[in-house]
Length: 199
Image 1 (cartoon, rainbow, N blue to C red):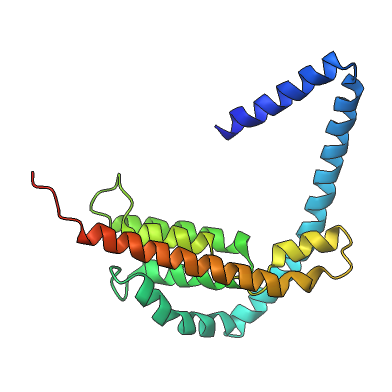
Image 2 (cartoon, rainbow, N blue to C red):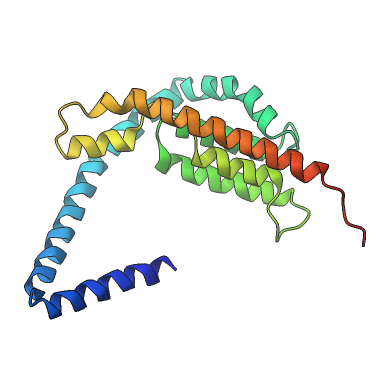
């Protein structure tokens, strides 16, 4: 569907350029866009490599393990139907820790592994379990203390103070996470309080 939307925009823009006699503007925009994309990617690579290195030091120093210990009661509350020692909980803790530190790229593989482990507990593989829905909601609206990627983008575009968004990001993600948890709890209550159909 997304590919069709992009194809529509490209074809529509080209047709408009032909009818307005500005085909050369399409060519210039294409080359300029490609150049900007490469420039942004190289800028992000340097910052992400730096932060991933810092996180590796934090991991070796035990910071992520301590953060995981702090998050464990919250994870037990959010995922009560997952067995205490199941591997999914470990991946969920890693995913949440990485998201809190703004490492979305590093959090994604842990989220995928957690979802695969939760699928093993799923009695109906064609329908997502409440735990899988909770993981998706928490992963999408996770509290972020250090928005690493956004800071990298702002630095790449020469922002005067790229880290000034830390406070607003923390507030916004705290509100989004609270909303996600409340909606998740409401749907869980609604699901489990609904009478089951016979047959």
